[in-house]
Amino acid sequence: MAFGNGVFMRGPRFWALARADGTLIEGPVRSLLPRHRWLRLPFLRSAVALVEMLAMTILLHRRNGVRPAASLLAWLALAMLVSLGLSVVLPTLIQSTLLAGALLEVLSFGLALLALREGLGEAVWRYHGAEHKAVNAYEAGADLCDPEAVMAHSRIHDRCGTNLVTFIVVLLIAGYLPLGGRPLADQLGGLYSLLVLVLALELFRIVGRWPRAPLSRVALAGGRTLQRCLTTREPAPLHLEPACAALRRVLELERAAAPQHVGECASVAGQAGGAS
Image (cartoon, rainbow, N blue to C red; front, side, top):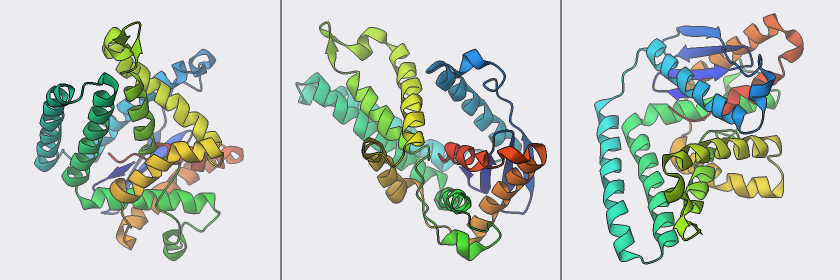
């Protein structure tokens, strides 16, 4: 996860947040999933993971001590107002409920991403790119202490949270399909949004296991394009160092706790790839 002043990395048992000023915050991963097998059932595991991810994000923002910038709040408020206006105007201009809903979801998510892009500032997206380069470098066996070797790797990663956007948009559009005369989303109300998040995480998990499969490549194409155009930028060495430092520290902690499982770190570290 990228911040405006550093990078967070997570392994199976430990996490670390390295900041641009050289300081490093670390701690154990507290999750219910390894301790309760029944929570690892399909869909239920994604619901638990979603709650734990939100809790971790709140904790990290508090520990990091960086408050949301006024510009971010202003951009998000503007995006919400425009989306609200589109939700009123589009159904009156387009007779097809499905087409109007699809256009609304695509435009709303586009506005939200643009608001994050402008409101969070350039540093976040450079740290996001550095996060991906560090994980890609580790997975390729590169030396994380060699900035030039790490910089040569891609800033695009298949397990980036940005890829979730494509799944969520498609599933939200599916909610406008009529079922029994009424759109499914209308029948389920707010519950449908929760189901979309859980199902999107499940699909994301499946695609992450076989990223080279033809269907997976199609599913990831939208997210990879968003990473390239919106949610990552090429980092400078000053952005790369915190990303490498955070990942090195997680690997050290994991190696000390359970040497035989250190290879798991790369696969888990990249799963929180969405910028925050």
